[in-house]
Image (cartoon, rainbow, N blue to C red; front, side):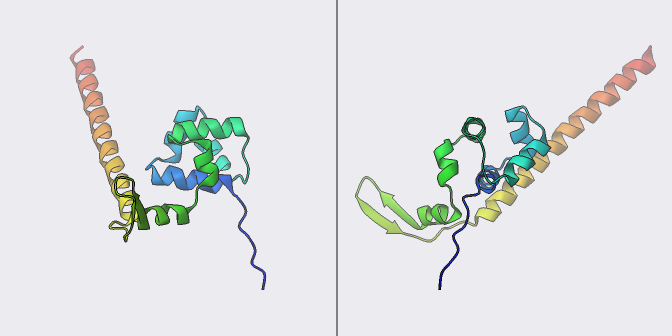
Length: 135
């Protein structure tokens, strides 16, 4: 029986790396100077020009080769089989954290930051309204 190979979908890899970095599409869009919709379109694209891929890699803090070679399996294998350069031993360990928990923690931190920024803006509006009433 023959098995079909998965296509090398660069857009999905970009999306996954962005998520693992705790970055929203809007943040990546700002870094790239494009719209959030453009980022969404990129993440749905199977291929991307090398120049654009380089820009995206820089915004994500990785190399374009890291994007091209990214796989979830490689990430889990990295954590499962850790090579200690100092002793030359391979340690086979289980991941002690759930990556989804890390992603949710980052989401909660972003939510708290947004709420603090919103409160600061509301305080500014109240102060400016008070100044206008005094005139």
